[in-house]
Each structure stands twice: as C-alpha cells, then as structure tokens.
Length: 214
Image: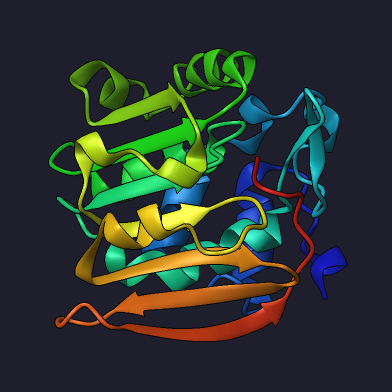
C-alpha cells in the first residue's frame, strides 16, 4: 500500500498517509505537516516519494510510511512536556517532528554516530518551525554511540531507534517505567513497554528491513 502515499507536497503526502490508515494520530499528522521532509533529503524532487532516500555517508532517511507507523506507535508517549530519545537520528527529520510534539516544556535528544550528519541535521532543523526549540535547548542532536543512549537526559518517556539492532540494555535502563521503545530487531519492528515494576512487555508489530545500528 505504501506506493499510494506519494504526494506532490509535504501536506499532500501526510494527507495520503492518513487517508490510507497508516498515520492515524492527528497530533502526529499535524507535526509531520509542520516539518517539511524536503528540508531533510538531498534531492528535494524526491522528498515526497514514499520510499527511503539516501542522505549521504551510506545512510538513508526512512520512507514516510515508516515514520508514520513509528509516530503512531509512540504518539501517546509524546505528550507536551515529555522526554524522547531518537537513536540513529540521521537526517534529524523525526527528531524535529518529536520536538514539535513534546514542545518547549519537553526534551528531545537525537544521537547519531556520523558527525557530518549531525551538523547537516542541525542546519536542516534550523530551516523550519523546530528551530526555536534548538535555540531554547528543548531539542539537541549529539554525536555518539546510539547503543549507549544518552544518559545525561534520561529517563525518557519514549525512545525511537532508527536502525536494526538487538535491544541495547542501556536504552532499556534509560526508559521510564510506563515508557515505550520502538525499535527494529532483525526483521521485525518491535514495541517494548516498561511496566511500573520495571518488567518489560514486548511484541512484534510488522516485518521491516532496516540498516544495522552501528
């Protein structure tokens, strides 16, 4: 179904994701409309095609439908004032969407191991409405090993991992009780919920193909 979600504009792309039931959260849809995907790809002409796009350094930005699914699974954990970690933040696109959702009173942290992508992602974010969140310190992108998370800002209500991995223990430890991780594990997209007593509930929600987390 993903091929039906191509758009001529950013708003059109998001509307199609919603129309076909991929993006159900209105709050997430509104945030995606605000963050123009064209600012985060190398070829703006391909920005609204529903497929992964290269962003340099052997990295890609995920297809819009995958971003939409992840946003839907995390939407209830991205309330204003909440804290979110984006591991393998790459282009910075999803971190910007998260930041719009949790707002100035929240905290959004991206971690990416390729320093050039960190620099470029910050410049991309500065082009849009999440720029003021960078200025206020509510949004930051850091060079680092994503498997180690970012303990300085933990614990997090939501953690998104943008590359395939086993589940790093550090990320589980940095998740709040009552929080949620969305992570691709081998060829499955997994949801991991941490219960109040610290135990975990895991389930696979779909088959996926992601590049490895390094």
